[in-house]
Length: 122
Image (tube, one colour):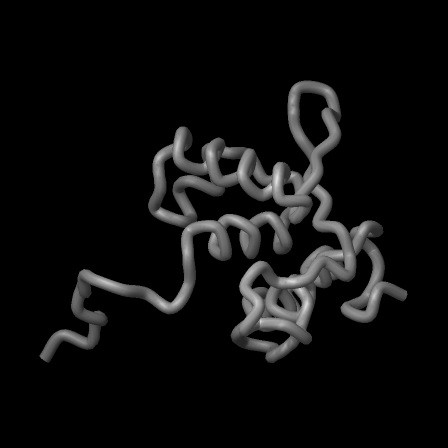
């Protein structure tokens, strides 16, 4: 019997916005092309999502040469009122856990202003 998970359609637990933000949290220097490949989206869709996240205050970027370096502001609240309490950084800490070690994938996974800060921003 095939052990591969069957392809399902319909709803998913995470939005494309959450997926893109999680990839950026793992690697703030990710290219749009790489984010798109990882999230199974088009580059245009990723560009639109990044623009949405920046407009909403969930993401910022700085130009470094010909690339972008992304930052996820610390302390940003989740959008929906029913999700009040945990922050975006709390969600990203869960989404960026290294599956083998059970630890966050890297220091940038905390979603803080300083990519070397821990999950609590210190």
